[in-house]
Amino acid sequence: MYKSSLALAVALGVLAQQAGAAGFVEDSKLSLSSRTMYFNNDNRETPGSKPRPDVRESGQGFKLDYISGFTQGTVGFGVDAQALWGIHLDGGKGYHQDSSTFMPSDSNGSSVAQWARFGANAKARFSKTEAHFGSALAPMLPILVSNDGRLLPQTFEGGTITSKEIENLTINAGQLTHAMGRASSNRTGLSVSGAPADSNKFRYGGLDYKLTPDLTLQYYYSNLEDFYKQHFLGATHVFKIADDQSFKTDLRYFDSSSDGKNGDDVNYAFDNNKGYAKHKGEVDNKTWSAMFTYTLGGHSLMVGHQQVSDDGGFVWLNQGGVRDGNGRPEGNGGASFYLFTDSMINQFAKAGENTTFGQYSYDFARLGVPGLKASIAYLRGEDGRNADGKGTFSEWERDARVDYVIQEGTFKGLGASLRHGVYRGTGTSSLADQDQTRFIVNYTYNFM
Image 1 (cartoon, rainbow, N blue to C red):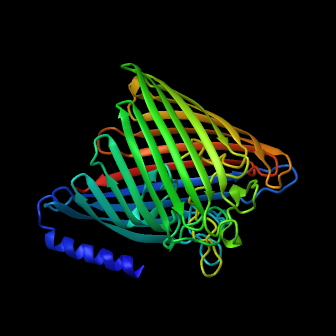
Image 2 (image 1 turned 90 degrees about the horizontal axis):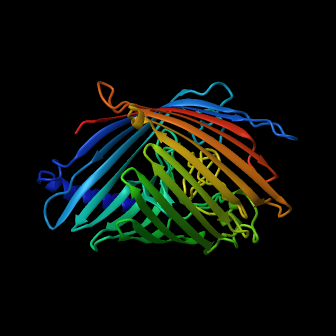
Image 3 (image 1 turned 90 degrees about the vertical axis):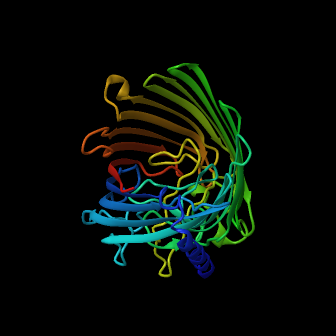
């Protein structure tokens, strides 16, 4: 932490000397985002077991973002800063779970009244290459997806480089050391589902190559030291049928394997998403998925299939098992990943799962109501292997959402989203049946 703070301070000192240069201030942006959210997870009773307590909470989040331009010269410098503040509005007595990732937990197991954190990045630009270093990074890459599914976003600490020096080719590389969870004021090391240990070295590199205007090819490699290595191959193609009609193909393949202490040290053991593993605690997985989307006017129909290999579950960065010095959750649980099955409640990422999914969405701008969109999705997973290796399980989820953003007038940009998900499963490795509802109101005010 000392070294990273010192490096950031030196970078900010350089910027202070050049802040008056054209571009740094003129291209700066300052915005305040507000998010009000109600979260209700209704745990249904399942045969032979009692339901867990329901989760019902509401909160208010604020995010202040400052993004500078770059100073002039061969190498331009800049700084980005982010302040986050979460406020507990209401949880209802007994409706906050100690392991909740919606609100941080107090020492007595209830929700804290408020929490906050601050992060900043120093950045530099040379030609068409940018480097960012700091604690407010939010990567959106095939091997790492920053989660923004609750009041405040998940962020990371480390350094990243993006280069577009070669036409049609984007190169991404970086090393991350810590994560800041969406329900936490603190940072932790990086880990996987179920592991109490963590690592301070997640390295990655990848290429996005636009072979034609309609076809993009991708390759990425990542390594979480002492946990796993992962290769990703992807291809996206959009076939334009007519001015108002298209067909999109999106193919994805992951190959993940064990690294370092994983498989040998119980503290570095992957729980395989609480599913089956051929070798207990080890990362050993291959997952492929394909999605096809047909768009006609305001209509969009998507269908696809995903196959998780039999030897173990799909793996991604997930700090949910990391605890603080008192053995309590850090609020770092909740992580996204680059599969089509990363849905509202479930992930469909356990060993052996064959998941078929589909979604229909409509943009009501075609009916004269711009800003209004609605969708419904259905996923069904079969042949998942129970954690004990005996038999299989199945599960399904149905999600629906309606989004509306005011397009003009005093409240232009004010948006609301209503989402409802239903999950049901059979077998020992499925989740408990649950219904989930979220209501979110977003607004961003731009100062400059």
